[in-house]
Length: 279
Ligand code: AMP
Image 1 (cartoon, rainbow, N blue to C red):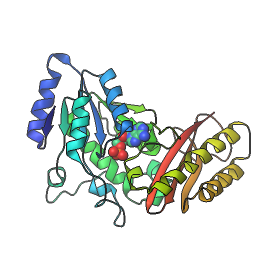
Image 2: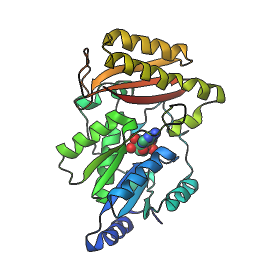
Image 3: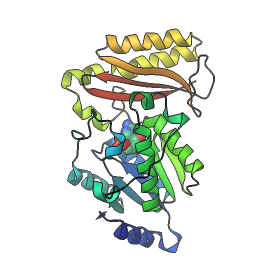
Image 4: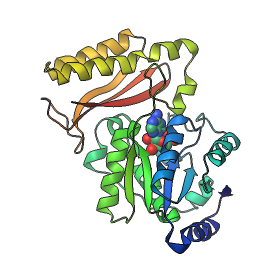
C-alpha cells in the first residue's frame, strides 16, 4: 500500500490505478480506524477494482471548544489495518496541503445542515462538505463510500454531489455496532469503563422508541421518553432525539416511511450520535 501526502503524486497514482478502465472507490475517514471503517473498506472492495482511503482530521469541521486537538491519531496502526485489507493507496495529506495559506473558498450547506448535528455544531457541515468536495476533486474516484452512522452527513454529501454535479456515485454502508448495540465510533475511545458500560442505554432507548413508533405510539411522547431513558441510563444530556424523513431529513410529527430516528447525546465530555430506520 502506498502512503501519499502530496496531490501531484496522488493524481499520478490514481491515474495508474485507473489504467485499463479499472475503477477506484474512495473511503474518506479521520483515522483512528475501527471495524466500522473497515466495513466501508470491504464494501469498497466489492464495488470497485481498487480502494483509496483518506485519513484527514479536518480542522474546519470542529468547533472552537471541540476535540480537534484530542482527536485520536495513530497513522501507523491505521496504515497496517488498511494494508491488511488490501487497500491500494492511503491519502494522508497534512493540514497545509489541504488548506494552503490564503485558502478562502468553502461550501455552505443550507437546509439539510441546519438541524440536528448542524444546530448543535454550527459550521460543522460546511467544513465537512468543503473537505469532502476537495477529496472528491483530489482523488477523482468512481465511487465513494460513507457510513450510515452519520446519517445527516450522508444525506448532505449525496445532495452536494447532486447539486455540484460531481460525477462519482455515493454509497451508504450499514452501521457497525459492538455486541451490546453501541455504534462503533472513534470517540468511544474517550469513554471510561463506567461510561462505556452506561453507553448501551443510548442504542437501547432508541431501539425501544423505534418499536413504539412503528407500533403506532405517539411520536412526541415517545421521543421525550427516549430522552429521559438516555439520561436515566447515565448520559449527561441529549442534544436531540428526532423522527425525520429519511431523505429530506424534515422532522416528522407523525410517523410515515421512510423514516429514521436520529439522535445525539453527551456522556461526560464525549458526544455520541446514532440512528435507526423506523418501520
Ligand atoms: P470518521 O472517521 O468518524 O469521520 O468516519 C469515516 C467514515 O466512517 C464515515 O463515512 C462514517 O460514517 C463511517 N463510520 C464511522 N463509524 C461507523 C460505523 N460504526 N458503522 C459504519 N460506518 C461508520
